[in-house]
Amino acid sequence: MSIDAAAEGLRSMAMTPSSGQRSIDLNVTPMIDILLVLIIIMMVMPGLERKRGERAEIPQPPTTNTHKTDEGQIVLELQGSDERPSLLLNREEVSWPELERRLRQVYAARSLRVLFVKADETLFFDSVAQAISAAHAAVPGVRVALMSSDRRS
Image (tube, rainbow, N blue to C red; front, top):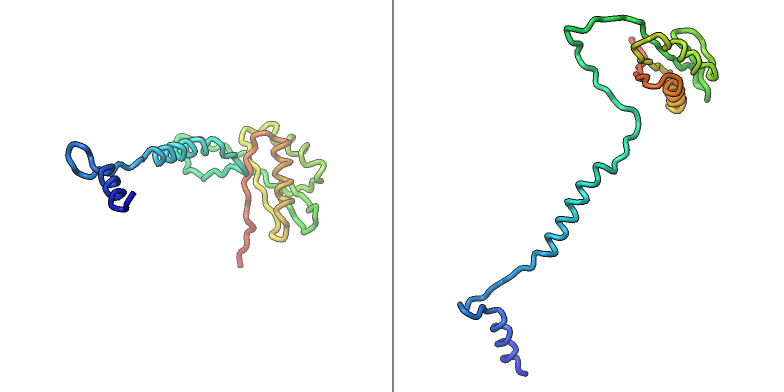
């Protein structure tokens, strides 16, 4: 078979039989398959996400209808730079083993369950996380707010 005959055969395959014009047909099926797979992946991924860490709540302005009942704030302070810092619950010293029991006592008659945690800047967060974990174990549903140190110079 000569080169001219092969070229003629290619030209006849690319021509439509009735009109004599060339026809270019793209096969888009593989591209559509890929797009469908990507769409399915994008739909499934949000359901697979795991919720991690503490839930952050943005302070909302008070509504005019709310009545203010001030039960006082419960502040847990962590002081020192040791592996096990000292604890102060509303300025009363509390030991680590006694922390959960004391928190249960404090929150037993309270409707507002918010614990403010204040720690020295020299502490590692591990100690703070252990105190927060103890608070969650003692009082289910307690909200934890972290306080910054008050530095005025």
